[in-house]
Structure formats: C-alpha cells, structure tokens
Image 1 (cartoon, rainbow, N blue to C red):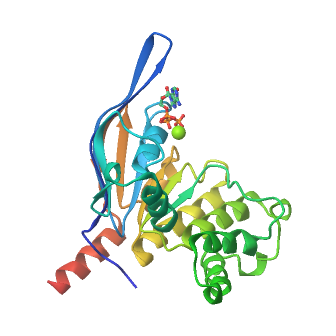
Image 2: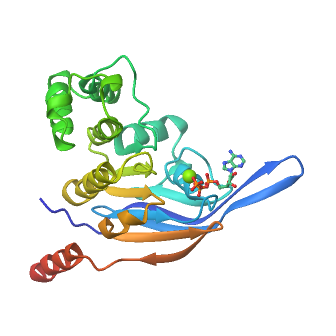
Length: 249
Ligand SMILES: Nc1ncnc2c1ncn2[C@@H]1O[C@H](COP(=O)(O)OP(=O)(O)OP(=O)(O)O)[C@@H](O)[C@H]1O
Ligand SMILES: [Mg+2]
C-alpha cells in the first residue's frame, strides 16, 4: 500500500538553541524551519558538529529549544505537559541510533514485545505484532537469538523492528548505518524507506553516508546551525509517486 499524505507530521519554526560552558556561549541551532511529511524519508546531512543531533533531539521533544516551536501532528509540544509529551513520544515516535542499545539478556522477540507491553498494547496482539515487525526487517528466523549471537546488521534490524512495532507516525534515526558494512547499511536504509512509503511514517534520518542519498525522497543539509539546502532528488520512485498523484487528480 502506498500512503501519500500532505499532513505535516512534524513542523518546526525558528528554532534556536545554544549551550553555555563557563563564560562562553555556543550557538548551535541558528533559526531552523523544517517540516516533515508522512510517507517520506528525509535525510539530514551536514558536517560533524553542525547541529544535526541537537536538531533531532529538539524535534523529538527530548531537548527544549531556547526559542521557536516544534509541533507534532499539529500540536505544539511546548503546550503538552511532561506526561503528555512522554505519551506522544511513546506512542507516536520511534527512535533508532548508531548503536542498537539492545538488552543483553533478551531475545530479539522479547526486545520487541517489551515495547508493546510498555505502550499498553492488548496482550492478545503483542506476539503477532512483534513477529510481524521482525518479519518486516527480515529476521523471522532470528527471533530467538540474544544480541551476543547476532551480527551488527541483525542487531540494528532488531532496533528498527522495536521502533517499527509501534507503527510510529514519526521515526527518528541518528546515523543508523554508520556502524554497518555496505550491504547491511543498504538493507537498513531500504527498510527505513519502506517504513515511510508503505506505513506512511515521516522518517527523519541523520547520516554522513553519501551512498544513502539515492534512497531518499528529500535531502536537507545543515551547516553551522542553519539549513543550507533542501532538495528532492529525482528518483524512479519520485516519478512513480507523481504519476499516481497525477492519475488520481
Ligand atoms: N549537551 C551539550 N553541551 C554542550 N555542547 C554541546 C552539547 N551537545 C552538543 N554540543 C555541541 O553542539 C555542537 C553540535 O553538536 P551535534 O551533536 O548536534 O552535532 P552533529 O551535527 O550531530 O555532529 P556529528 O555529525 O559529529 O554527530 C557540537 O559542537 C557539540 O560539541
Ligand atoms: Mg550527531
């Protein structure tokens, strides 16, 4: 199923953020405006130290901006209390990082089930949804393994399954392929793209890896705390998307 929607899953206006240490102050985000639509994979690129992870943390409501607003599904997160923000993050947002951060004692299946238990999913659905999510990332035959018995690529795919099982509206990934070889990195970015296109999630992925560029719907480049370019590469998929929209109109 191809989900196409203009709903801004995420919208940020005039974001500023600085860090102080001692007498000095470092401006990290210097007026960022960014929206992310459902159904799109957006890559966030830029030099080391340009503010990508800081921006992701602010967009995900993990860190507050000094100025500016972030809205998730049209709702300004500054208006949500801490409990509501946590609930939105838990139910609507998935997170994937460079390191998969799995629990050493749990099998792949249990890592994914745990998330559903935390979100309060009906007990009767938990097993089938966890299986489905692991199948989605190609790990149907690895569900019983603990992290020590998995390859780096497999562990990262469990981390994706764990983020995916919530069927998040927003998926934040910070350098999810940087610890992987080319084959696994390629697999991971294809999965992220599928999550955007098929599940209709807004996927934001920070990366340094220029090999991923060809997979993205949109590439936003940040330099020194500002967006310096925002492009939509022409891919076969872009044409496909447009053809469908054109045919439907
Ligand atoms: N908690 C903090 N306190 C002080 N300075 C910070 C903090 N977090 C980040 N910084 C600084 O903000 C700047 C931007 O950091 P950030 O992690 O956002 O960069 P990045 O673009 O993600 O870089 P990389 O590609 O290396 O991950 C850096 O100079 C960093 O040292
Ligand atoms: Mg970073």
